[in-house]
Image: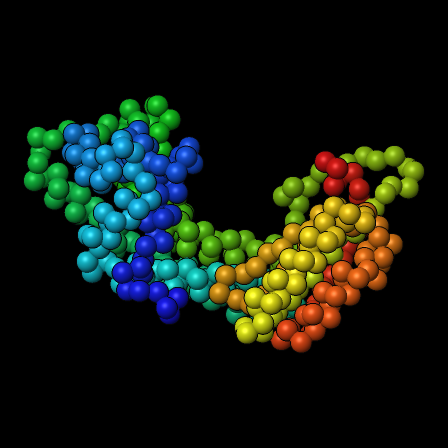
Length: 334
């Protein structure tokens, strides 16, 4: 993050905007996608067409990533520092999500209480920040309508009937108009409904849900009552391996890990290997699915596994940790 130029700060916001506007994931924003995403209940269709053509500097009839970022980058002004700060905040929230998911279950009840309290306060603070921003945004919309009362805004109801996605801010405004009273919980739900801060707020919400599930220990959200035959069933072995790597050895570790994964995936009883790395962290988790414990044991004695363990011995901050469990083989086949 430190080596990024000032001009680059805040640009990931618009990459996310592009991703959400590009509904068919073809790498371009068509006119139909543009009006469905950017219509705000204020601008007329002709005005939006002029804006679309202005952004489409390549005159292709579609907007690519570079065109969208270039246009808004030239208009950021004082918002640039705010969007850059949002990028940093989003990364920090991601780190908190990871560290809390790792430490919460093993904490005592007092520490769990403190974690839940801090999460609720974080939600309250973010909600409190969102509300005045929405109020200011609505006032700007109102002023824009007064300036040109002769312009007919894009018909949002017509867009809704055609299946187009209505911008989240307009949805939230409609909810508030339907009810003049709003609790903190309702305000938070309104924020999650919107596109503008969805990434950050959903991360906070995801952590709260994770804490709830860890607290109750058992998650029945996807519970299936499965009747099986009485004969012994084949059980498969799931293994989770956690690594924390020294910063200076991270590239070498990833190279060794890649060689290890390529050597065992799909052969010797290994059904699958998945690797997850965590942003702004030197922590990686490897998930392995084995047909049997005997297959895993043979892998541990193989040249590929021995080479991997030897190579990474001096690259780890702390020794590898992990856990394992068996699951019915039929689950994997499903």
